[in-house]
Image (cartoon, rainbow, N blue to C red; front, side, top):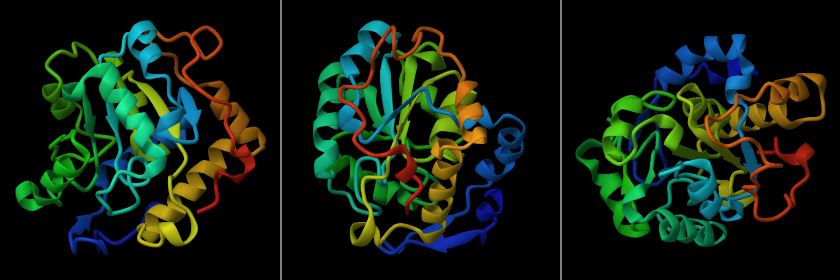
Length: 252
């Protein structure tokens, strides 16, 4: 499972030709996740960003800002067009929190792999929300995130939404944020541009966490608590019942 993460230090993205460096922060954090696998267990799991109750996040969970991963969370991999299945969710987040309190935290756009912020600027123009600039990739970069949201006083007032357990969810959980895991938006031919390593690792992550076996069940049973949110029974954050079978979430 974890050996899938050992890859060359740089790889080439198909869409923009951007050379993307390997996420050293994620690799160094693996030791912590091996010892404490519940760091990768999300508070909430939904099919897409459009199944999240953003008003409940704001009114009942003390959340002041929401961050989204980009690829396979809001858009198809390495595309800048908002995916149809994410449109309602992003609009609801903006309507609820305001445009300045909704942003993208990507491990490509806005990082040192995006010289001159070229990709980030294109994404901001296309999606209408900010891309946070950060030199350290998730699960690092907390300082730059906090600086981006001046109204946020502590990390527990942030919600991190993404499709990757070892980056998006571990990042949020390490710092006490409320974490929401989504399935990748694209599969099959629609997902052909996705980075091959990311695709394999994501499938392994999801199989480990959600497949019906004792390790996954035990890991999820130790999901970290949140400072305000007391659980789905007391404060539902899922708008509809999950349509996908849990047993299929590991498929690339």
